[in-house]
Length: 322
Image (spheres, rainbow, N blue to C red):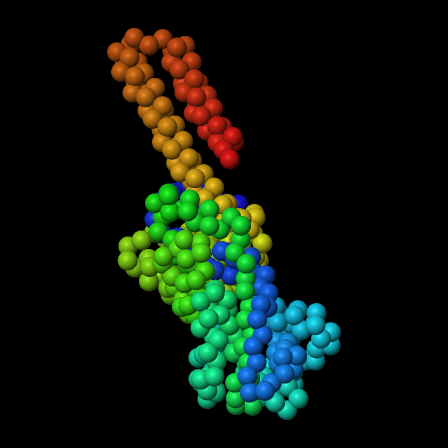
């Protein structure tokens, strides 16, 4: 769904495209893959505490932990207090325990040492998002979550590069996890550890380099970046906020739809130029003859009608575009 002709025209001029990772390159349906415990903490106890704390969170990674907890433990309680810390994780109180779940930065700010978490690097290198769990001031475990890459992502990114576009991936994940996923789909330009509120600033920075930028996203936190971009593409399976902010909405979650939209833009502009050529061609031949009195008015009228019919017919060929 293209909101205006202006956006369709801009799409064919793009030379750079920024893809959000979660829900765009990946399916946005993460699953728990690893649960590692430290300091004698029981696995089921770690999962119970993490799932209980994440129960009130709306983050996809948190919901994956909740689903895992409900599958294995059935009963999950809600925490007494909860505070989301954007780009880092969360802080909560459960059964009198102070619980932190998030990345390295969160643990550092909370004064929790992660020296015993050697498994963290391995999980991140495998492309998994590893969340540290700290309970009452000490590291208690790691819960790793993986989001499957969409079947069409690698092919779509290859097509975008073949069209001469410079492709970026933007994500809040750490450098190791982001690079592992980017390598799998063939992206060299990785923008990792970007806080949700900073995505628009990153897009503006790329534009400042003189590039015409397209942004593709699906979440609420992608909306400012979609507005900041020269052309914003929203994944139709995402949030209403993203679709409202975007210039072009892809009706399916398939990344190949972006390739189709850009090709449609190229084809449309080519058709417009063809139509202008034929319109000027008929007039440039007809006007001199008419000025010299060599053109019968009936023939002039027929030529004018034929010019309009040829332009409309040429335009209607776009209906066969796939």
